[in-house]
Image (tube, rainbow, N blue to C red; front, side, top):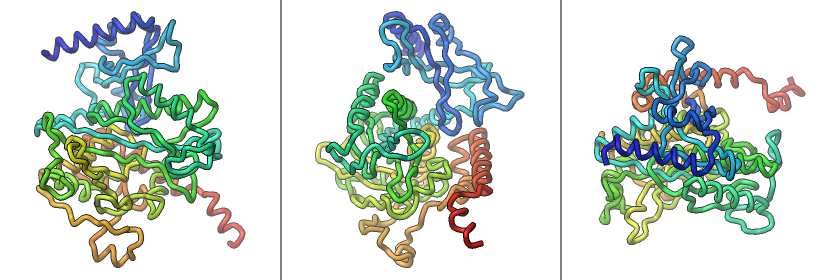
Length: 448
């Protein structure tokens, strides 16, 4: 179908659905450079005009968007993302949402829009004949409220006991996500008390980035409806596992999985191995994007299943990259799993830099080092050095320093987002650096 005809068909579908469901308001969603969801509402009377021309707004107050002298922006809703919000009234005066592409007043894409950044990277992959598929596993915690970290249960990994007090919360969240067109594969209790995971079904990276933004809001909304608080903070509680966002990924050429080779080691093709090598080589440079908060590096420490070592393997969960076991007849499921990102990242930028690193590995025809099947945590520092196993940056300052010098990240994000992101993260680090913590007061005040 020609692009214009498909666009008109999608527009007509949205108008029809809005009328049939008695939609009164439509929330237009987009994100700032940090992945914080932004929104403003329009009435259904404005819907047709918004689909045709977009809606203007002031971008100067959005983190990393326009400067004051270029603040006029246009939010152009993507009709393919139209969904009714199930937690709002459904029979009368319903509320829907659509994700938006951010444009300049002249209609050209705004280079500071994270969704545009991902689209640009996906086009590079498409020009090489690839479709980029991802399946992130987002972990999160339920707490009694947002003022502390009092847990709801003492459950553990995959527990199905009375200890798991959040079973109903997870079930209601899954039902709501499915009502919004998001396929769910698994939901279960995670390792730490009150820690949970709901896994979305593998799909193309742009759809998945939109789904991640929806997922995080739905998890929080359902929790709030039940009087509790859900958090995607990477390491909210000292001494127990933090929350990660393991990202399963693969490249397809048409219906063929370009990562699969029946005769390859781990059933991985040469292209897949080069992709892995690219991720390993450029992982330190992209860490500030995948792990963008001060708190992210409280999770990225040895132990607690945190993947801090630049290694890969099949079964070993201490490695940064894991190759899930191949099952005969499931060639399309062949993939690699990057375990270092956390669920508080900007998914549009995270998927962009991962893809850029993998494609660079293919472009440079890299070959990964031998996989490490031993437990890397239990090796001595000298053993890891002898094996050539390096680590991810230890804190946000180190990560920023590496990212700031990275040509790969600059090209992946574009100058506008790259510069705004680096500036934002430096401000965050400097604010943290001068803060006097409770740890310091408890430790030093009595003795100094």
